[in-house]
Image (cartoon, rainbow over all chains, first blue to last red; front, side, top):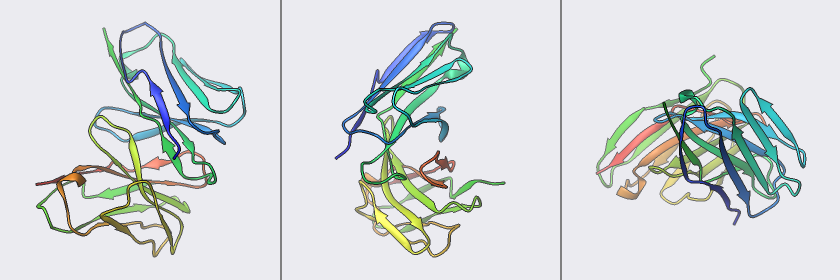
Length: 112
Length: 111
């Protein structure tokens, strides 16, 4: 079946440092979505990318969708303590647009 | 606008007991989903529904059942609780494939 892997599993940074998480799917995706889950909370939708090679920015967050639509990345510039949480990518399974397979997640810890 | 509401928030079950996790949404979304998340892990799809009266299995459906009699409600039934079902359960809904809205989750412990 479809597998979506993320690396790294965990990263600990000092506040102000940059952070990147990478997402790789075993199959081509029709779109890629990113979610953030704060400790003890529920996943919250951040963004969706649809086009091959697409890049979107949300303040300090930059999202990219690979040319082959099998990989994606999330880059955070100058991390803040409010960025703490687990970041999940998710993409629709082949053959269905609405059913997402979630990645394994990257947990980000930010300290002062 | 409440979004997706899950009840209860916490529950402890004994092995062999049954329970229903409730999920309701007020956004008129056609698509609804149940995921489970084990500690430190990702989300695994249990069941999903593309509309009232239509349900289908996800990756890990064994030990669970669902029904979708209305657009708003998508309850998840555990018939014979087992320790392997200790997890956090999230219900989610979406209009199409764009952006799921998650409930706050039900933390279930089976002892």
